[in-house]
Structures are given as structure tokens and as C-alpha cells.
Length: 466
Image (cartoon, rainbow, N blue to C red; front, side, top):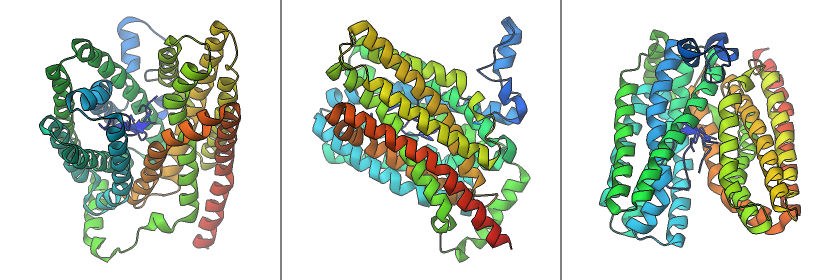
């Protein structure tokens, strides 16, 4: 559901939704858009299926103390983000008085700022350490989000939206670098899968709370929701500040600070295979716009399925991501396995596009069932693609310059979140069945192209090592 972040942002509301994307969460959605530490990815975490009562509750908690702490931080963050996602559009249009055109333009410009901020934020994490940079960015996000309560003009909204998007995307890149510092290499992807499950749970909880503000439907209710999100960021900043970073990671950050003055060029921007994988991952990220924009428009405008099907698609996606994300990391520990996961994701996403397209012209009940089946396929492709992409974003970088590599990778994801809605509404919905087929072909091609890109990286690494 969410992109990632803490996986990614939530471009639909202009407010951030961490864990997506990366997001993001977060990200409209998906964010969003992680790693269960240890081998617990197969039998621990929210997808565990054994035991009852206290025993089952214990299984829902991750066995790694660091992942548990990160999960707690993620939950606080995403509950606040889900709250703001629920009320964001109505807050901007009904409380701030923005038109739909103004809001759309503002979010597009803010999205550009977010893309631009990812790379320098990652470099800053390498130079000064991921944790201090992340604490600073999250604290700025708290202040900026609270600033919406003081906005009384469109220029002020535009400036603040750009700040929120920039610090949010920068924080997403820096947070992913922090995961590389505090989680062992063989546990990062499983850990991020677990965190993504927590992200979806948190956003669901936050959105449910936001429904109360929507029902009250007053300026004060909307302001309270926005300020609650700001408070959640402040709490998260404190929690990250108190997070223990291994001594080796602190030493690496100190070394990076000493050498920072001499590093002029970003190594990730000179890594051809990594850049190709970043672009391919961004193309796979169009699936989030497909789910959050394309499916609702298709259901309402081009099928006879009841409108409630739109809500049902989000429920199906969220439940399946929660149930499957940790399990989807199996086999991605090796580079070749991660590439295969991306290839399978592309093919499954292509199949989901075709299934969803077939709902056109069918009786209402049948159309609804077909759409939900297509969304179930999309969820399966989503968890595989996310698991493979996370693994490759770390593996291709090696144990070096995590901030630089995560900054570039996150910029690609942010770009997909920004352009996705426009691509889906014009090129897919605008051309009907042909548009869905074209999107499916693009997703399949992107997923299958990851494997040769990874093989290229292997050959390049072998040449450099010789």
C-alpha cells in the first residue's frame, strides 16, 4: 500500500508519509511504496501464523531488539502520517481555500523539490552520519508541518509544501542509510520488510483516526489532525536521537566527516549499473499510481462495478502487503535472487494490469471480483518488487557511501511517485484497454531488465577487482 517509506512520501496530500515509497509510506499511499532481522523473517513478525494469546503476541514482535526499536519509531511516525493523509486534501481545499488546480500545481512543484533533495541529503549522511542528519530533517519536518496552521496565502503554502517535501524525501534517503548502519548486511532487507508491515499498520490506524476529523468536518478538527502529525515528527526526532548506533558506524561517520572535504563527486552517480537499476525500480514504482489513481478512476468511469469496490481494493492491497511482505524477502539475500524477484514482480504486475482492464464491460458483481483479483496480483508483485529493490539498493552499493547510494535510489523512487499520477491518468485511463496493456508491458520489461543490469554490475565489479 505505502511506498516506502517510512518508505515514501504521500504526494496526494502534500504531507509526508514515511516508511514508503521508501515511501512512501508512504507514501498517496504506498508509499511506501523491510528487513526482519535475523532468520526471523520466515517465522516472526506480523505474518506469523502460529500460536494464540500471549504466545502469538510475542511472535508478532521481532526477535531483533534494534528492529523492534525501529518498528516503534515507524509506528509513531506512520500513525501521524496516516492521520494527515486522511485529512490533507480537505484541509488544503476547505480550510486553506485552495482550488484543485492550485493544489495539483503545488504538489507537483513540491514533488520536484523532494526529488532534488534526496541526493544531497544522502551525501550529508555520509559526511556527518545518518543519525544526526536524520534527526535534523525530521525535526524540521515537525516545524514545517505545524507551519501549515499559519498559512493564509497560496505563495506561503507553495513555499511550505516545498520545504515539507524536501525534508521528507531527504529524511527517507537518510533513514535508509541509517538502516544500513544499524542492521547487519544479511538482515537489512528482512528488517525493512518488517518495518514496511508496521508502516501499513500505522497508516491504517492513522487513517482510521483521521476519519473522526472528517466526520466532525470543522476547521479545528482538521488543524488538530495536522498538528498531531507535527507532534508525531517531534517524537520521532527524539526517538532517533536516542537510538544507539554501533561503534563501527560511528567511526565510519567520523571518517566520512574527515574525508568529506576531499570528496567532490558522488560515487553513485558514476555507477552505471546502479543507475540503471534505480531507473528500472522507478518504472516498477508506477504500480503505486496504478493502484491509487488508475484503479479508482477505472472502476468509477469505465466499469459497472459498485463504487465501494474502490475502498475494497485498498483493503485487499493493505491486508496482502501486511501478510506477505516479510515472506517475500526469502531468496533475496543473494544478488541473483533479488534480481529474479524484480523480474517476477514485473511479470505479475503486467498480469494485474490485464486482469484489471478486463473488468470493462462486465456485469457489476463480476467486474468487482475481477478488479479485486487484479489488485491481489498487484499486491503480490508489489511485495516482490519492493523486496528485490531494497536488496539491490544495498548490495550494489556494498559497504560504502550508503547515504550517496540511498539518496540516488530514493530520488528515482520520488520521481516515480511524482510523475506516476500524470502517466496513469493520461496514458493509461485515457487509452483504455490499450493503455493498460502498454503499462503492463512497461512494468514487465522493467522487471525483466533488472537481471541483465545486475549481471553487468557483477562483470564491472570483477574487472575493478582484477
